[in-house]
Length: 190
Image 1: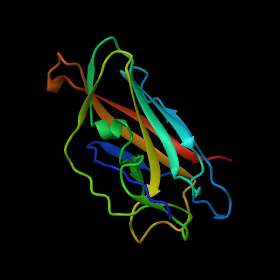
Image 2: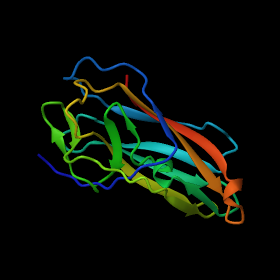
Image 3: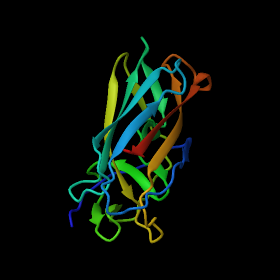
Image 4: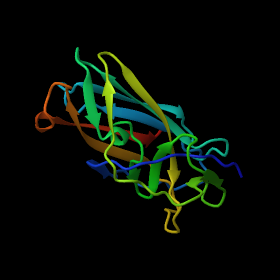
């Protein structure tokens, strides 16, 4: 079994929903696509979710995505919770997005997907980040099952994530922060 390593953290305002049905044939190759939904056109941050490795059952590497966030304004902006904005530690149905290569994970031959090798603890400290005008932050992430005994026996056909975050400009007071949402999904190719 291959081992990989990850680092993780917790966000403050994350709502995650699960939709779709479970797949029925574990022998089929399950490849996924990413869809980003822009919730508000007036948002100062533009998000993209891109699939880097689409086969969730690959023994070579877990399903891998890249989240990018770009400042669409002419001002320096500060955003939080940084980990949520970049998709780190978003969780649904016992699957979690982790930083690629920062925590141990391995392929579970019995279940047919990658799983964290150790329990995942997430600190509650709020992290902020800054983006200059037209600057982009990118983060590669892997989708793995948590290390728990009650993992689903079948891989979900869709993982849908909704994130709420706040944005302020350096000259603004903390009380002037604005709240925004974005969502993305990882769906099995038909």
